[in-house]
Length: 207
Image (cartoon, rainbow, N blue to C red; front, side):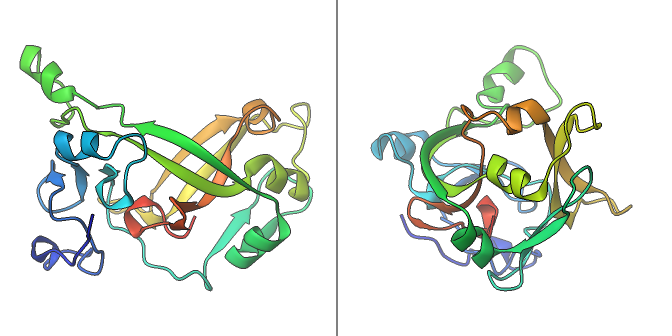
């Protein structure tokens, strides 16, 4: 499944990002939110090729290089740290897992046919399975000395690099409970590879 510099992106901030032209665009040109034609998704079976993995973007795709990117761990940890991508790869044991991701709005088009929602019209192809490789979040947090729950550490918060549209300097963020992040039986990773290749920009490059 090839990717190209799509002419539809020329006048946007994402004009440097290569994309598969068959992807169904759901929110106009920008931000890029898309799913593959369902028959193409089904054709490839269990593992979804990266170019037709569904995309959910909230704004501009951030630019960065492998060598200048860092992952910063701050807050309720004894040893705040910044890790380069090379450090993540060389200093921590990697894990590789087949994981299915599905957008919460998958098949919303059908919901909207019954009763209009506030979401846009996802079809049935906002679901994809890839083999992801990365380092365990638990290992990184242990290296940084995360505090106990009694010490006030309740959640692990993740914050993206890019500012969201609308100004104000707000960034996309999410979180998981600290107990989940540190659970040995959970496979939470900081992923840097998808299907044997470094992440594509639309899927979080570099991590």
